[in-house]
Length: 96
Image (cartoon, rainbow, N blue to C red; front, side):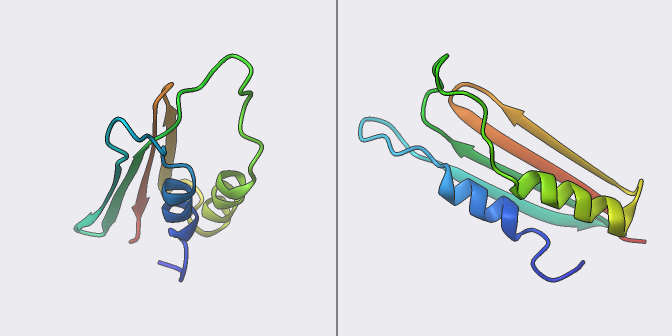
């Protein structure tokens, strides 16, 4: 796995975690291998989204997708799920 490949996902979890004073603010990071396959999952609570919040304009995930495509072609799966109060990113890479 290239150095710092997962940094953008870790940074996003900490950068966009919620900042509630009346309920828990959570980050969950999982990473493990099964044979030659790497499984990762990054989740964090986030501020409630409103209609005028608009989409995120960051380039971190887009750059990661491009890097994965160049390095692993069709041997990876990256999914991003965003609810109104939770953000989750899962990445699976076949390292063989």
